[in-house]
Amino acid sequence: MLAFITTALVLAGTPQDVPAPQGSIHAAHAKAGLKPRRAASPPPPAPLGGPDVWVYGYLPYWVDGVDAVPWDHVTHVAFFDVGLNSDGSLSSTSRWTSIAQELVSTAHGQGVKVHLTLTCFDDDVMDAILPSATQRAKVVQNVVNLVDAYDADGVSVDFEGMSASNRDGLVNLVAELSAAVDEVTVATPAVDWSGAYDYDALAAASDALFIMGYDYHWSGGDPGPVAPLYGGDPWSKYSIDWTIEDYITYGGPPERILLGLPLYGKVWPTTNNTVPGSATADADSITMADAIDEVDAYGRRYESLTETPYYFPSSKSQAWYDDEQSLRAKVRYAVDEGLLGVGFWALGYDNGDASFWAMMAEETTLDDPSGDDDSGDPSGDDTGDPVEEGGLRARAGQDFMAYVGQTVILNGRAQGADEPSFAWTQVSGPGVNLSGVDTAQPSFDAVLAGTFTFELVVGDGETLSAPDTVSVVVTSAEGGLCGLGSGAGGGLVAAVSVALAASRRRRVTRASVC
Image (tube, rainbow, N blue to C red):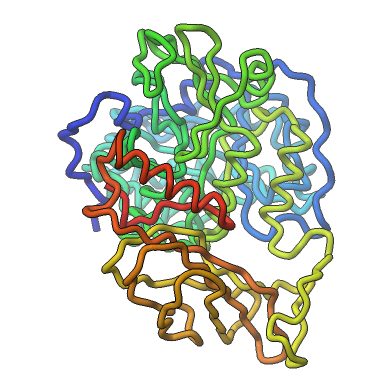
């Protein structure tokens, strides 16, 4: 199976519409030695037991070592990095050997796993290693020696800019590493322009795909959201939501996907402060901590479609970054989509922001961290009480948009039950005939425009969950919202955004993406 090679390789948009070409923000940050200037504040303790999903953080060699890790809030730390040579030997191993003993000891004391990141950003090296079983075996043995010497838990494979000719070779290397160490993850691109990454085969050969869900607007392009949650006018269709759909469509199972998110932003020199704007030179990266410091002086703005804050450092520059609010929306999206978890590039760029990690505890703890639940019995009788602890939880999915004439399918899940029961009810909006109310995916025919809200309660045979809701905004917009700009179309986009913002969460459905 080939990962999706988009038909938009011949792009009709301007450079701002194009995500980063294959390359490595990881390598660029290594060259720059990107560090926050802000004084650190210790992250708060997490709820007992830590996150309920994977929280996977890359720890670059140029940040402040073990002190940069919020141990209560992560499940995995991937130390970045050791490199690869064309003869199968490893380079820069002293980065690992100088910290591995302290890192692994500290991590294991906190119940956190440690992976060693193996990187390659050189086509010639990949061409020499990946097609050859003999050369791959050398690499595997050299990596295993470093991992086993310090009792680490696995490997993160970060090969970027790879050509399609090495697609099978990468799968083979990952499978061979998986046979030799406990866990293997693979860093994969947000958009696989060359069809080099075989999503289903890589997922089957590894424990997780770490999707690098950032650099949609790259340093060499025009300014815009680094990690847009949704796409659409005035931006391109490429976004985190598009990427996740692409991976799932082409065989990447959600339970093996980690959504990688940025703890950094970019500052572009521009012609002016028009959004979308035009760059006059390459952007510089800025850590999340430094961007948060700077925005106090310049005034924070927020782009609601993509869930991205930004500011203007001058009349001829734009800074786009992520912060607590935008990352909450993206982490929540990953949890609601049933992904394995989330991850970050890179630990240390937050500089231990206490408020940020408190948010992460809320969004990655599937039960209420306080243990409080005053929702009462959602069934209205004595058949069961909502579960406060233990993991039984209804997931009605994220809010989305549909069109008159479509059959709308809801997508519910139950967490904490092997053979759950489902009970859906409509709680607001014009009445519809909801079919399959006792299934995970009920449906209705969208005959009228309006906002429709549905409630899901799940059970495990003994108890019932607290309710969860999803809202669907149905519009009669002919041909959808794609390509609409100002005027009536722009007003419709704004109206839909307002309607969704007024509901529990806002979402542009995949069906509406151009």
